[in-house]
Image 1 (cartoon, rainbow, N blue to C red):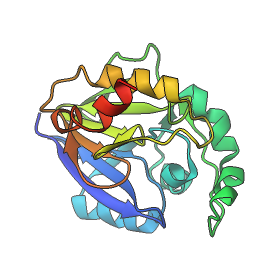
Image 2: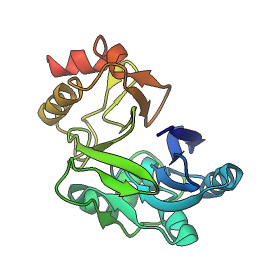
Image 3: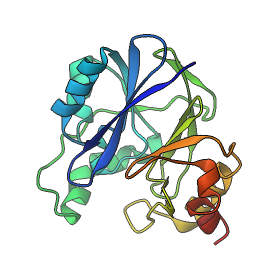
Image 4: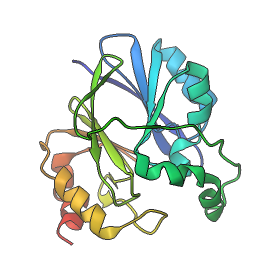
Length: 211
């Protein structure tokens, strides 16, 4: 399976939204944080049909365009059940960061259980890996040789734990688990540049996993 990933950097916090597809014209969107019209333009440019939306966690800068895109494509929007309450309070938390506009709260569907078993959708095999710590319901999605890490970690640094739902011990355990993945796996984070598991074994993963 040859994976194609289109990145759209959205919003004030420069959040990475991803449009992902393989050999077919079907695709999924991961973390549509803001700027729904720009994401829609990228979908049209890629000439794909959106079959689902996946959210790595429930913070406002990762879900801001989800409600619009769910309606636009009549697609389910998946989020770990532990972050459903966080989504319902998204504008309260957004106000703490002086967000300029309110977010339309999306209707979210619980990720299929049990976690870890592949989800087959849009011609993709999607592995949802529970990685609490940044939020209670944080999830990384592995598709082929690419890990979409949300805010669990970024290039050279671990995710924050001082935001709603954060827990340092949980994050350390999550990063310890991710450090067992193959080093050649590419990582597409929620903010910033691409990295790899191997590169982060000397950076964010190693530092927090041994803290």
